[in-house]
Image 1: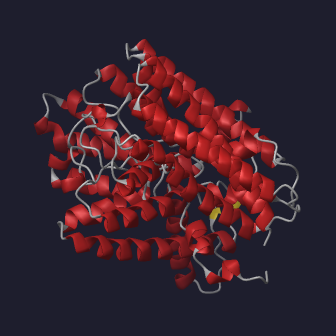
Image 2: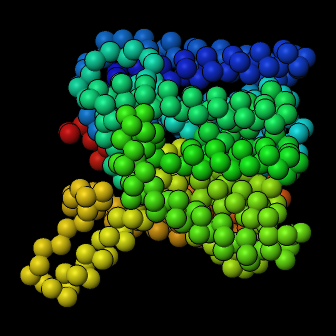
Image 3: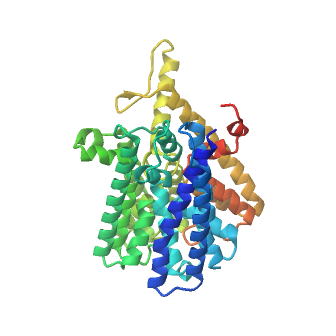
Length: 485
């Protein structure tokens, strides 16, 4: 194991986190919040700088050997430690007085979950509100992807692809362009452009600059931390519609945008995953709009709120314009299904991913054909390309691990003795990186009532969901730390 390279990479990540906290300090100064919030950030930046220097000193003579094991360890340790350090400003400033709560809030931010322990979001200082929302933007595309895109870390033996595969969501990760650094850079350029467009449309609707930035960070990262106690309910229908559209756009596989840039219209617009994603989303919007029609003044208003909620839940963003916890059972059941399905692979959204649902459906169809005609050759194809048995096997293993983790987590947090609906949807919301669930953790509730133990379990679920389970499992496997490869 290349421990020096691991130390070096973690040092770079700590340095980046310290750098990204500087704008939050500037926000504190602009709004005259020069007391506890600034102190919290300054102490954290100093600690991160010290750790970064020490780790990069340890790893200054790291060899170039880099394998999948190192990639998984760096991603798992990196996300956990960045969250632990990112929680310090909340805790040091005493705006979140308990560290477990601050850690839960920060993990929720970096993993773009949006679950919160705060009952009065507007009570936070502007600097911490900014940092809280900005963690969504950083976690949406991934800190390691950012590192690959802009930070010169030297040439390694395939380190780029190992890091990208460990951090990026979806059943497979490949190169959009021949070189991995170019791929990471292109992904971030698309991400930044879409974020700027989102900010522009929000500003055009009269939303203040600070609100626009924080809302765009949550929309782009499909995170859902609002800066108002009522999330998005207090904003105009136009601003809500902007978020509806951009949440859906950020839930699309970013390779589709690359194909559009190349003007490969047919390949982009007839992509099977994209068509299934849009089909599920639009179908759910219409069914829920019809179901909740009696709760609103007309079908137009019902469709407006149904569209926002479906886009928010399916892309695992978590913003809300209405309390869907009081909607009819059919609508709530559909939303629970959408929580599990999630967004497209290669997007900033969470969940199982539409790509896996597509592969599972095609695998089931192929197995039925094989049973009817045992001697026939049945392969799974997506976009007219044969899907390898290795990919299909990884999907099956992922689903088995996903179900097992969901069951174990549900049983563990049931020790707090809340309702089954609360516990089940809390696990679903955290494991799928959504944010709000149903009952006590619905859009008007929060996670403050859970015990510290349950909050740690749910924090681990958020990390497992964002990193697609295996990097965290690898971190806790004894085989990872064996001296022999």
